[in-house]
Length: 113
Length: 112
Image (tube, rainbow over all chains, first blue to last red; front, side, top):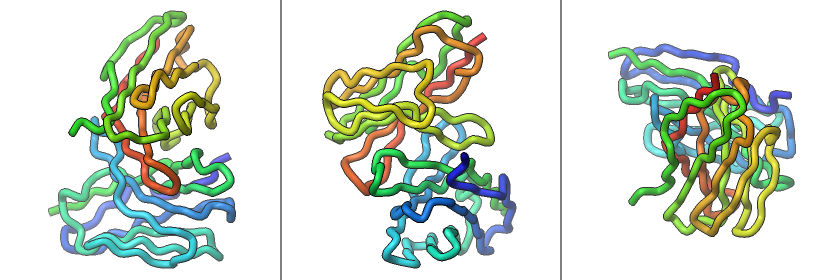
């Protein structure tokens, strides 16, 4: 059962515009949400996170929004840069089993110059 | 600062052969993890070690064994490799909940 879904395998945006990546989860017990970025032939690197007590977290060009009632989170990148081209994974974590971080299948973002 | 180091980076095995993937972290993290990444599947947890001396199964543990050798090192063993184990394997570590995972560069394994 896929507890974390990223329904868009790919996204292409123009440099300077906004990139919006989406993620849905099924279990309301998850209480910590993360985004990772992955370049080819490298391991994923942590980008930004949010706990369930918040609905928004910002870090520079990156903002994560959490809608708990819809079980939905999104990552906004503004403005998008060519160096942002990578695969983005959302991940979720729950206190019940806080070692079992579940990942979505990823969205490949391409930012065109 | 090496972070999380995995070896080997590439390996080709024949069905039935065994091998061990090695992982070491130098961040003094308590918890260590092994994930596999397959196309369209994201990353799936194989085994984890919440602290030195403990190991637990994750989402896809069948066909694998692990050893937490000490606080720094966590190895993953395939006793009898199968083509279904062809994948990219990532080791990760974490200081504690709810912190982020720090990943190694990955080990690409092909089983023929």
